Image (cartoon, rainbow, N blue to C red; front, side):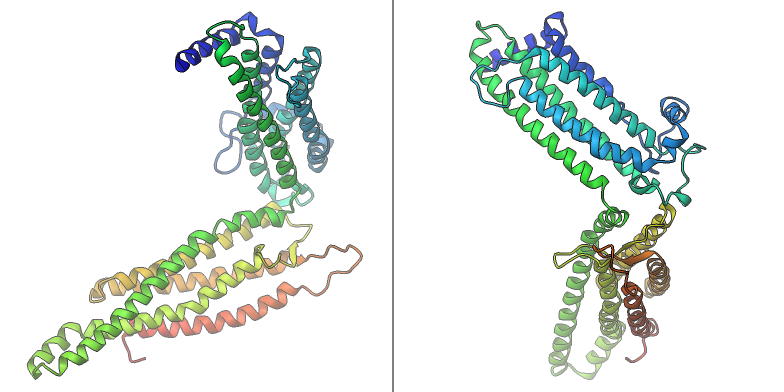
Length: 456
């Protein structure tokens, strides 16, 4: 019976929403969805093909030179005026439907709701114009180049795509959902108080009242998060990207350590078995066993030694990574300098990503070798070449990244009047380079021993 009622109610709601009986408030709420055109971005972070010569470019061309040259002012207006106004209007819309309190039968003030919806439409227009005006368009001559956008603040090119993505997500998952809940609540409230609607009307009113109230609170929190993210420093934005590297790498490292431990245990067990077996075998059988297992016996301890010798390099990478990230024990005592550009930030980000992938590859390769048939000499030669290549990559990426960080990282201090002290990161980087050299020498020695199968 209940499912039949719900189907009837649903059909009636659909009819009401598409008919003149929906009323001006419902129609006005439904029209708000058209106020925001999602900005479609490619993987490069620029506007997708098809938008270049139409609406987005016209938005750029309509902007004055002063507006284009003052992106920080546009962002500040969004942070301090537009988004806070949206929060207030959402709260006002909730109250206009008498949903802020808990009456048994909410009675909306339609006049107030109409005014609020009109204000909402203007605010959503502003958000739409802002998102399209900051969208990076390939080949746009009016756009500030990523090589000289140091004065663009929170609208540097490297972070505009992320900001647009967050706005797109906010509008889709919060605003449109909230408006749909408002529409459903109003339509349910307008259902006639007769069967088959009477039995489910009160239940659905309570249900959608809860949905509207919760969605309003979540939308307001999402606005706070959007403002907070847009106010982050360039260094904090990049840190979020770097943080995503940590879990996959740590999982691969744990796998390598587990495999190496298993191999060590097998090696020790096999050595004990060989000693015990030799007491009961004649000279001929000993010779046969020796011929069949001499290569594996020679390689296994060298491979174990190679894995252990890689740990100082891996630990130094993790030390560098943790130095750049926020941890439970504190934050880095440095940040990017004020004159850094998107191009320079992208270079640092690319080098750290390369270093992370190279270290991941080394860890994965060593785990693979521990699982491999050690008697396969063809694979042995190729794998040794690959290991040597990864060692050179690590050395190159470490050096390039540290050089870039020393150039662009400056001490962070909350006190403006205190002059910046000596760049602590540069001092720390010198010590790290010394440790890297020692770790590299140890790894190369173990790698050569593994390659040549010489005594250790």
